[in-house]
Image (cartoon, rainbow, N blue to C red):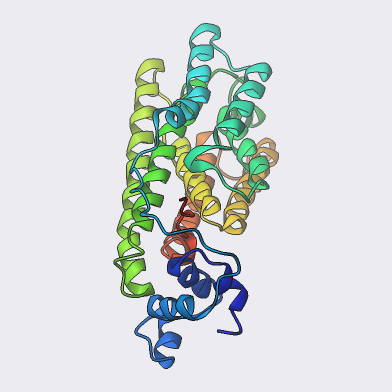
Length: 315
């Protein structure tokens, strides 16, 4: 109680104390040594025994969170994809000016709503780098290896599908956050909470993967054959990275994105020497491996209670 007095005194409720204790390494086993069944039970006693650092307003019943965000949030997430689709349909190219506009729109979209994160701005550079490789990388590798001419418009359709997938990503991230927080109250320990959150995380990832696959297949049907494995792996990689960042783990997200970006750059440098995979294969291999690594990290970190602190109550 004395060791964590600042945390306990500043908490708005018992669940915030439980999440903070878990983040400091307190387990259900440690709670049982203190004669409590789990960390949640220990948090209830600590909340009752330690005075509040500031006077707490009269408790009010917290409104039930909606499983899906409002239409305004959805509209904001759809702007980058709509702009990219319109520009690609009219100009048949994605030039530097459009890339700059889409980059600004993407930055604005993730600064609000379910994909907003207080930390993790360092991932932006790697994200833009990977999107640039998705748009121009396969054709650049092909041209550098001497297997064909560089075509700046070859991957416009799949790039547009990736930007449009920001909308289902936002809805999936919001649904996962709400459903995970809803498990805090009925859980009977950290392990119980983690077991309830993992299927919801799997459902969010699967729903996004399905939506992205549909968008990529639609883009391919409109423009002819195009590689799908690379853009699909990149989309899943970016979604996992954003989930980790939003829930307080920007370090693993930045590491995964930076590693993938560096590997993509190496394949470009090796293309004239005919080393490594070429064309779209490199993107599929690199982003697929990075996506698997971040997915494993997500299943390890996101089922923790400390990743889902409830929003503050308002009178």
